[in-house]
Image 1: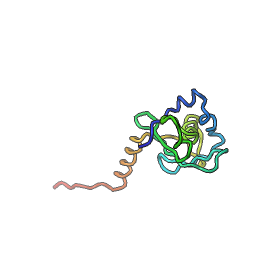
Image 2: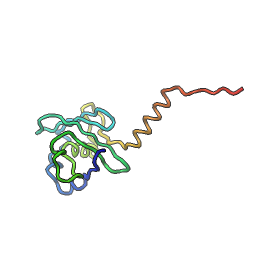
Image 3: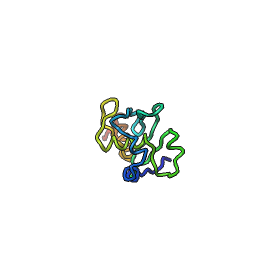
Image 4: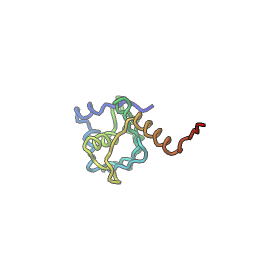
Length: 127
């Protein structure tokens, strides 16, 4: 289960992660509805992040050491902060699409609607 993340505390504290997470200088590639690859300019490579909303709370995780070795379980790493700042600032990913963090329920509902549309439905004939 991904961790609940407190981006507000990071922003208010102007933490190193928050300051490092400049979305204007980051490369963000969406890979799935809740997964991105994020490359920061001072980083050694792209990291895979998962970020979504669950009942308005941001939940997520990242494969970087900064996320795994953090002291506070609600503290996001710079890669996750870059995603949140990109969403808030209406930034675009590498494909030119707006970075938008989806609600898990919204995605499940959308997937269900698409599945219903795709199966053609069943017809019942009355006599």
